Length: 183
Image (tube, rainbow, N blue to C red; front, side, top):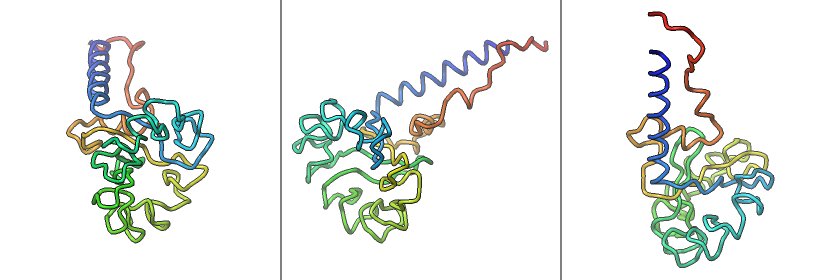
């Protein structure tokens, strides 16, 4: 009986993560670490200019200066979103200085160098000594996602597991495969 319940719970978890993955696409980590395979600073990893989903591809959806979802379009309104390790939203990775959620808006919450939530503040979210800071050359940076969902703030309790790639889903599950039934 326990094995059946565990299998059903595992299947439900995998289905919920798969459904959420359809809304958002993981694009890599905003990081200056050139050795991390998920870093957009690694030209052989997530920063590959030939990868169709790379923000470094000038012809792709997220690097094209004419795409509404591009980080390089100064008028983009649907740029990729940034999340830290706890699943906190850190703004849109955009060069649009007028978007209130853009990291390039010097007067916005996520672009001002005086805001605690801004990656441009060396004493806040942009602190070079934090592991999830994009300016830490030895860290892993912030997660970059495309899409329109609210990220970890969604109603799905398992959404945070999909936004934190360093954590393993298996470590949070309980497996009772070899235990006999107590019934």
